[in-house]
Amino acid sequence: MIDIPSSKPIYILLIFLCSAFACQQSSDQPASIHTADLQQLEPKLEFVISDSDEVLLLQVNAVTSDMNGNIYVPDQSAMQIHVFNSNGEFITSLGRQGSGPGEFQSIYGVIVDINGQLFVNDIPQLRITVFAVEDGDWEVRHIISNEGGNRYAVESAGSGGELIFRQSPPQSPEPGLFWYKHELSTGTVEEGVIESDVLRFRAESVLVKEDLMMQLMPFSRTTVVSRAPDGAVYLVWNDRFELAVYDPDLNLTDSLTVAIPNQPIDRDERREILDEGFLSEFRSLGQQYLSETKPVIENMYVDSNGNIWLHTYDSPEYMVIDEGGNPVGSFDLPEELTLVHVDAGRLYALKSDDLGYEIHVFNIAL
Image (cartoon, rainbow, N blue to C red; front, side, top):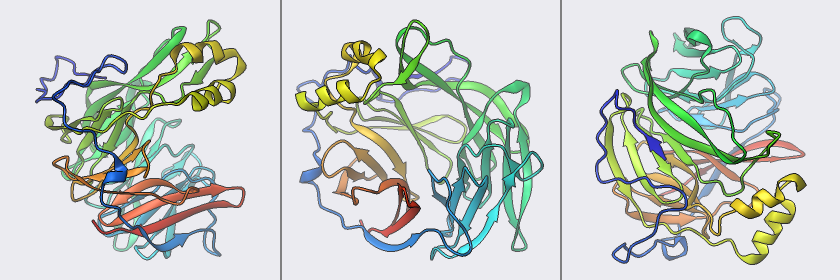
């Protein structure tokens, strides 16, 4: 669900983002798209980034890349961003634990803009550090401070220095099923946040008991947010694939509806979720609020060509649609891998187990 405050007039074009349990498909809707019916794509492994004499991967959950194919791997344990070239060869590590310039207390996501600037969100220190390359050396170009104790992170960056910030404003969970709300704000590298709370949307849902104990809701309905390399942001309320696209100034520029079906939760799977997916204190709430179906997607990525890569609950799991909403193909990855990033012609998938972390980089042709 997306709320658009009246302080910034954004006009919605042919898009109706509806609540998780109220949407019904009408008889004139196009036939649902099933991934098994699409052209099967073949990811081909190029290389694997793993521990080496130069760098150890201690705690990795994200990857990003720039327009030159350089790969950036934030390591939450090492408090560093490891940089590799397009062939997976180690270049350098940026940052360390600390509170000085270029030092971090936490790394809450990193993004690279189209100009090659690297933005590192450090929520505990209420700041965003901006790195850039100067004469072949990385240096801290800017530090964006969060004023008034706000916990903003950079969600997307445009080519002209426009920034979209994201934060979760203070909220008081109520007993039952509670959706946290997040907000997007606009600003610049030099000035930080300029206009706050431009667009608000529902995010993760939690079960809340009277004593305010909480547990994440399995198969939660949520707003999936992805950014494009040009700084645009794509938002989908994942109970139906109704997409809204906003430019770096948070003006609505496009919308798209694709007939991706919800997958059912069968009886055995539902029983397993209720028996094993909830703490004992939350089983009655889980019985009350667990949906009969899964969302249409789990995650979404946008590449520099405007293709949209979707992690679905169908089989095969992954589907690609072009910028017009036309299905391109589908594929699976090995079971132990999770897709975490896409750029033009490449997939980046993460493997984590007791032996450590690996980043598998695939080439894929559309």
